[in-house]
Image 1 (cartoon, rainbow, N blue to C red):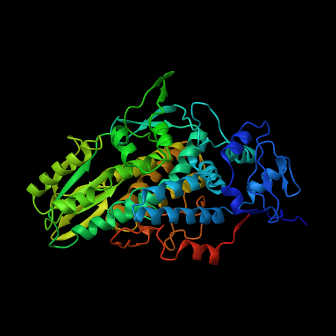
Image 2 (image 1 turned 90 degrees about the vertical axis):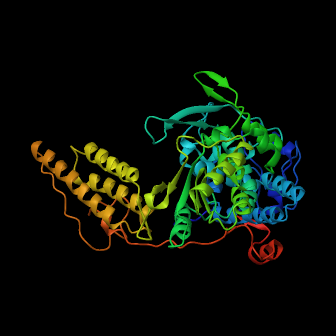
Image 3 (image 1 turned 180 degrees about the vertical axis):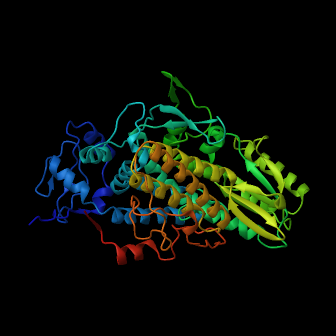
Length: 523
């Protein structure tokens, strides 16, 4: 009978008291293995360089490290880190910059937060993409060693690896800057410390990169602002030209409450392209864990500015990252709003795109976050955009073509993944006509697939889709039925007025800690 590994009890104070000298010593050790407290009897929480091992401290071998990392309760680690984040949010609500800096430094030097940062980076899909050093973490020992290799006091950022990906509009390409794994961990660590501040100071109408908020919340906000007959009749479709690449470094250094040395290193890292390192004079790197929060904070304040400047003008803002729309009662008001936003962005080094920024009558329709909003006979109609429909059709067509010479089962499995993922994004707007049209398109494409099978001398057959539960309870790769678009159940998404900060809790942190969490971490 196989026995489970015995849990390790590590005092929380041990995690918070590791000195920079000790971290540097561990970093340069040949084996890179940390000291781990073996039980609650360990009371000495500060270890100096050259310290000999006691009876309460041991250094596990490779096998012990694998077991230790694999049995960590990451949910509990996250809850412990969130308690420190709640304290930062409370200080941010009071605008106490000195307290924010103090709590942030305590968090980034906490071993718990460092473990969570390494775990987050390793679980991210981009962890398989290496930076300029080509390093990838593939073993549990490397992950655990990465925790103790983090250097914040003497942090130096490596240049970023620059690649280009399709932007989705024509032949345009979007530059992506890939940090090394070490830099990603450091940025993730400081993102943990900055996120509570960003959540507390964020605009109520901001929905991108906000914990607990999504594009569906932005859609619900737009429907709330434009859904009545007395709603404003004009909308400004805002588009910021190269938002991430143009944010002023000077403005960020003056207004972002975090370690300025680390922030400067992140912003001035430069990028490697074609064997040459180019400096970065403006912008935040797209692809860095810290960049979304920096960009969000650079755009926060737009809502309060508009509310103060355009009272009783039916001006409402809905923003998701750098995509936003602003409603207005008249076309003249919309033009004034555009000029006000242009001045707001200029202070931060950004500018509106002349080609993509436009003022539209709501009755003529506009696109936002993959949905088309149009007012017909006083009612607001929301449906997937034509571009969104074309993209899912192209995915279906490509998938069917790739399985022209294969059996039906893998084809059905891949098609089900496409159908369910696309429908889950649009299941709150009831696009019945669009779903039925996509079902017809899918049937036509499958008919061509079957004809190709017959011409190739292969018995190609697809089971007809069954009406019913839309495949609930099946695994994503299930191949016993084909899911229809029209089978998607309607799930309305309510609008929540006002920003909801997950880090502000009426229960004091001390009471919460004494009631819910003991002063040790069970691994």
